[in-house]
Image (cartoon, rainbow, N blue to C red; front, side):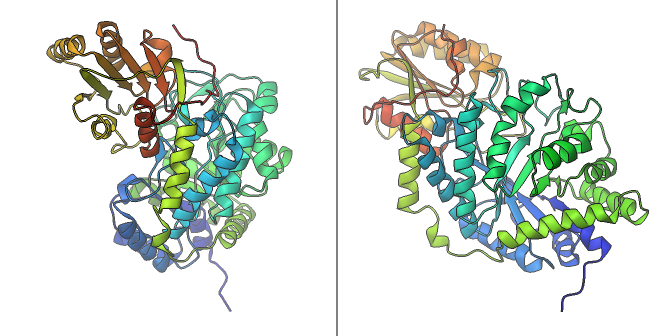
Amino acid sequence: MAQPMTTEEKVGQMFTVGFHGLEAPQYLLEWLAQGRVGGIILFARNVDSPEQLAYLTTSLHQAAKYPLLIGIDQEGGTVARLRDGFSESPGAMALAAASDGQMVRTEHVSAVLGEEMCAIGINWNYAPAVDLLYSAENPTMGTRSFGTDPEQVSSFAEAAVKGFQRAGVAACAKHFPGLGETAIDTHLELPRLEVSEAQLLDRDLMPYRVVIEAGIASIMTTHTIIEALDPNYPVTLSPIVIQHLLRDQLDFEGVVTTDCMEMKAIADNFGAGESAVLAAKAGVDIILVSHTAETQAEAYDMLLKAVLEGDVSEDIVDSAVARVEKLKSQFAITAPSDLDSIHIPDHLAIMEEAARAGTVLLYGEIPTLSGRILAIEFASALESGIVESGGQTGFAYRLREHLPGIGIITVTGSGIEAANVEQITLSTEQADWVIVATRNAAWNVHQRTLADRIIRSASQSVLLCLRTPFDAQVLPQASAAICTCGDSSPSLDAAIGALTGEFIPDGRLPVPLKLP
């Protein structure tokens, strides 16, 4: 008969931690063996190939004294940690942009992601993001959002949850109770959101009601102060929001997890130990500390001390552990299964079809490209901790496979040298067609300024919005504009298919757009 958990082990089950590298460090394997960690979060920094990741997750599962949660951000689209060797998917906005069959397609795409996570030994996905996209000024969401309409977002969220959980992976709706109209990234500072309680109840909380009814396993809180609910604490540390709103009013009985406690919204305003204690008191079940061993140790030690001294009751810990254990039993994985089920033709076909369905012709007509063609691609500008380095940038080089004579200019970095601007402008003027592929020009003044100059200098041009459609709002009109609503591999391929006439995009944006 198994021995009951010690207090030290119970507190450990409330922590999910991350690490750097392709192999688990020795201290972490020791923590798992001691039961002082209940879950692991993986990032792109931990992933090289399916074979390497299978070895890593096997080592984690084998080291753990108790069943283990291994989580990852695999929303699809812009935010995805499993790329090379896995089946990449279009993101939320692309799925919502399809003109028909959206819900079935969303469930199928989510199931493919879930199946491949399961096969590699991962059983918890921090997805879907169910925040409404109120504003083009919100740098956190963009194409991660299913749109602006709460009923539509709710339907897509439910379909995604069904797909993930049918495949054997626990879903996690985020960022509770909704990021709303905030233009501040919680990775960088602590936002205060002035939104009415009525708007929260009628709009932002609608997707949560729907996914709770659908049986979602977990919900992630936002590090945002919602003035109308609790003006003193961010949601992650607020018993008013977690206990009274999420537990009592919405009747959620699953696992509540924090977002990473090392984000500056928390780290710059609360100590690691203080925030862990406050989160536990607020009713959080899992405390997520993604990066630093010292911070993880401090948070664990301070919460354990608070429990042993009676500042945090054992009843709180017991309730949290019971919910965590239930989730682990529902989505139990002890090792990777069949790597042959990853990146298979059937999965790739589902993703390709979804990416094409989510491609939108914003204005103009698909041109017949001829003569001297120049592609100018803006590489990913990482202004946030959301999107990791190493993301997709190779649209122009993929395009060269279809148009061998095409000229390519890749613009990287946030600063543009004057000499380079003159060279790019000269090349633009000499081309018959210029394809301008932007990534978040709406939020990057350097990219926006140069893209503006390129489009004005070109005799004929196509604007290709690879991330947000809002780029089209801030740039002069080209001959035509296409939006892929994301730049994962299938979306890049869909863009090329549209440009080369393989298909005519018929997607419709789920967000309003004001074109110049």
